[in-house]
Image (cartoon, rainbow, N blue to C red; front, side, top):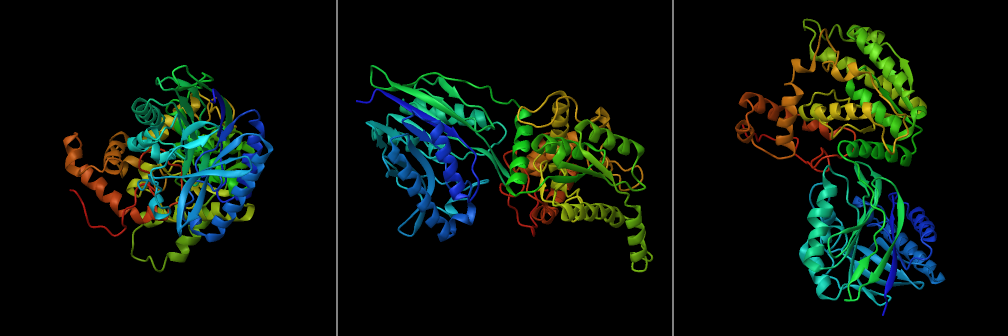
Length: 552
């Protein structure tokens, strides 16, 4: 009877669709796990997660099968067996699977049963559910292998226990979300441990994939509910966990390192850093370019970009008009100096005058209004896109979730670009993150310690500076009022009546609901951005553009 096992947990990133590259990386990490009996990789490590419709391509499935066989043959050397997440086709269906590779062969395959189909997930579109699976027999030990969503359902792990599982190992592709660490450990895995009396190894991936960011934070929990290992968040890592059979027959993981996970809001800041870094690097941009206005949104976006990519890959541009105040010019220059980034100034007055002349005849008899304000924003968008096209830098947009909720953004203007790190950050969150970064340094960032923006950028009233003496609060409620209303409407799907019962003015809530719904067409054309909360615009919240329903 096996009395001891060494199980390596490989908390890794992955590159979507790079089958050979992902396989090479797994073999390299396997070499680092020399001496282990088994090395475990995250969900769909061979393919990438979430693969979306990419897995519907027969060529990808065929090549994934070739790479899986290649990995299996590598285990003929007598080194660690491998538990690999991949996609397998059978009977005309696709299955999200884990394969046990050992002794040069594919020893066992287990299919994911519970397919998430909510929020960011749409696995039922792609995969067929597997049966309630039996444990796999690995060197005399029965391993239960619930895949990601499976572990959230008590009956899946209960079935594994009934069928003789001795240890639960769950490979995951679980995206970051504020507060999710606690839910994974205390609400889900601790419950499965109590119900089954079995220890569990929870392995999650790290890295960014378009709008999703994966934070790792893998852990091992023993049958008594104690945490034997806590891996760090955000970083690739490998740990060799030691398992021993107790006298009474159960398995116990020997205690190892227990890292402290990032508190909030540091976790959200680092999610933005990872999301932007992987998006830019994996899409092979040399760097990013962004407009630096002297306001808080662009200052925070620039700080995140520096922490993600380094100051030498961040190019800032100040584009003043006749409405730009001296404070904005000073604050943009000082912010660039504090971050150590390149700052160019391109005056947009000549373009404004040219467009005024071009449109003079057709605008005869019409007073200046929002049209002229939007023209300024679009001139800036064209200017930044010209730099992007000429030099290859990706244009980073700087709008926040509050603005995008109510349409306080110019389509084809300040919305133009390839990525938005603040897309899921309300304005009040932007203030919190800016204060945090001015007082702390990111543990995974490439920027220097110390403040990254002048204090005045945080304290002055927000303004788009598209007309004389303009302030955001001319058009919107104060953000400390607006953001709770938006959170209720977006994240909680509350009605106007429900928000009025919380103490908000009916007229204000009804107006914000109207603005939220009529701005849907803008959000459909917005760039992707990092998901932070429970309902980001895009993957989580999918509303029709044409929509007459209101709760007011």
